[in-house]
Length: 404
Image (cartoon, rainbow, N blue to C red; front, side, top):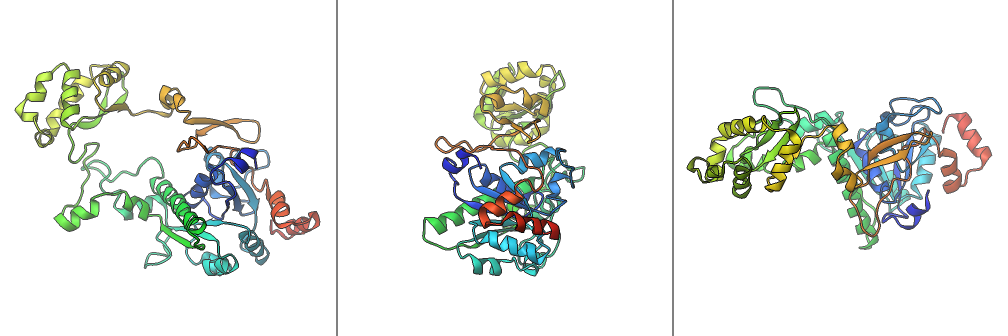
């Protein structure tokens, strides 16, 4: 591990075992690793985390998604399906602060690696258990995927246009929301243990619970008012004008000017200040009742203007607006450059790979990307000898047995 991690990261000294695969659980560990936690990534020999895209030949780069979310992790291969592998994991647990896993509930218990087994060995251990539907309930044994969680949570049904099927977000929203909640929960448990004199504890988080938590008034509006939120496309259900519009040079821009102040400034930008005093559009409720005609008015006006000209004009009038950017546009965007939002990292094979940089930004103990996702098993021998004291002869025997 690099010196900056050991001496300056706010989570320096925290050891995390990442037993999971794919996204929600492992990305929680990634977020902790960005701020200095030592992440030991346990992977199946010969295959590795599913995010790698299957077994890769030595010297061949895995998927970019693995290079991003495997960053700052020490890749160790252990076959947890064998008794010898389970024993190795238990020995590592004895030295760990946190274990993150996202197996189907009951799997680790069958391997002797469940909460009761590990907590008995290490009372200070914090175990983060991410699964599709949690450790309890009638759905607990069901497979959980991002898409399924979004549907069950109520997040997906209102997303899209009323005359079409619900639309899945382009990125794994449930996975990444869950990962963020899991990292947050880990910090709560660490604070309770280390600052409040508590012990270790188990964190039980279902994949559908994070998107349900951010659904704001969805369930309240139904239970208190009988309102089922329906799909309204890009329109805000209570805020007009707001939507996505195409400029004359075929670029998309969003405008959110439903408040009285922004609406008045938008009218000024359009060269029609009198609209702000028009009784048809005077209040937010008035404007919302005429959403179709207002959006059509904006659509026609915006279609006459090029994106750069329009964006500058709206910014000059302090109208909330912004582009809907492609990856190509983000790559050259001055705001992303000024905030250093894109990091360029060596992939370990001499190639450069770009990825989102660490967020949030801490002034005193910032996070860092020490390395991209490693080759499968890259630090197996180093970790087992460094932490558990295995000799070369013992490591050779574990290799021969297929344990590592």
